[in-house]
Length: 236
Image (tube, rainbow, N blue to C red; front, side):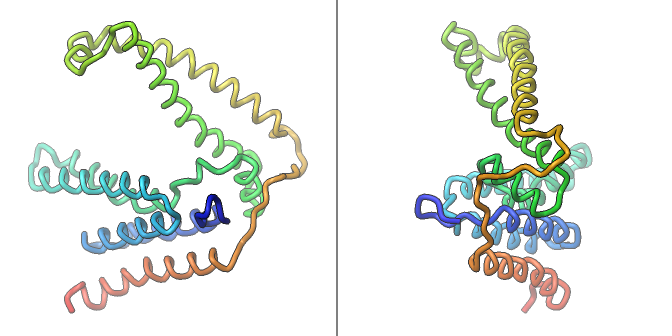
């Protein structure tokens, strides 16, 4: 799929690569293997012209890597070190899934239909992907309104009046969460989630030769990393 002169892979490519990479991170043992696999996932993002997202993922990986190094070997921080390590490894499959939430609802439903997934699963996944970005937008709006009233303008002010800032943010956010859930439920009903029949999608979903090449190449690279790790151990 080409959008604004950028090639965007089929959603099924993202899902399959995410599954393969999820299995891979369970069997990888050496940190260099994880690092190379993450580099491969960043290349996947760059091929689609998503430079800012690639930078965000790379920054998150570097930060988590530095934190894990600083906490390594310290008994009091063992649990936190474990969480940072797991989070760093999970960035690999998540980087393959990036961008799916930005696809149209019709396209996502059509892909779920072609994968023979239950309609309720597709709509539930779409609701989940739409919910958190919407909540983030609402949270930024609430913070902007508080700053306009002179509340939480600086970090010192926020920390000094932390309880006040907390409930002034939490209560409007809870109200908006209820409204958003009602709106999303209405959209799901409008799209026929309660009907036991197929729904016609107006979004075109095509599997092209480029999708095949992307899937084969990146699958081979991710799988071959484990073979190299076992046979040579990255010592040539």
